Image 1: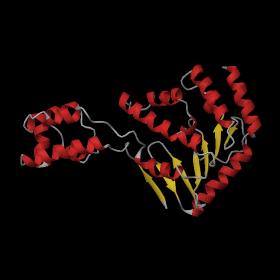
Image 2: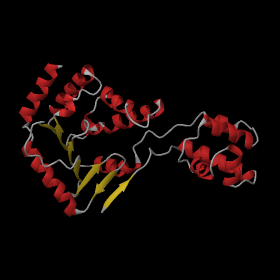
Image 3: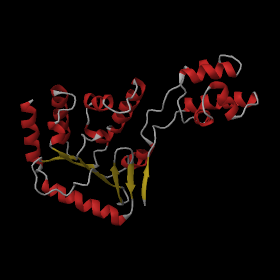
Length: 275
């Protein structure tokens, strides 16, 4: 089975409650979604998304709805309590759930430092550079979700974590020298843990089994393996044994092609000294 979906961070209880209040007031006034949409200047599809808690209403929607539904003040007060769920994109949530109980987690990354290893400063640099731009609330929600996920490294001492990282991810110096220096220190510190292995794939490397892109692999407590591959706008969760086996073989080959654990540590230390 291969599953790929694109989505936004999941809605919150407050968004669903606000939407239910809008729907109840709309129906009380005998308006269809299309009729209500014309009154407030939004499509019936937007009205449906708000009522179902899938879309965060903007200030114009709240004010227009308040005027169209009796000016009771209920919607303004409810809107003040709206928050997004600090969560993960829907296409990543299934993988994140599997991570929580995994006994083995392997990651090869060629685009950016993996989320489990990121510092706050590095993560915020990535969030700040995202297109379309994120607002402050979205950035805070994403960092909160990432920091919560990083507890896997601290709390799951019996889980084996392996990372193969391209050398250029550090050479790029995303966020500047200070951010990169802190990032290298953080990765080196995590690599001292008994259950965390970090290998660096050198930039000059004539043989490379991972040129097709990032790979994540995990083993469940039942010894079943899954894989996850992520692209620009979505991800693939791979459960079919044949496909997972192919990605396992690629990861194993890369592990032999990358620097050893000691050589990787030495390279990271030299790169830090160059900053």
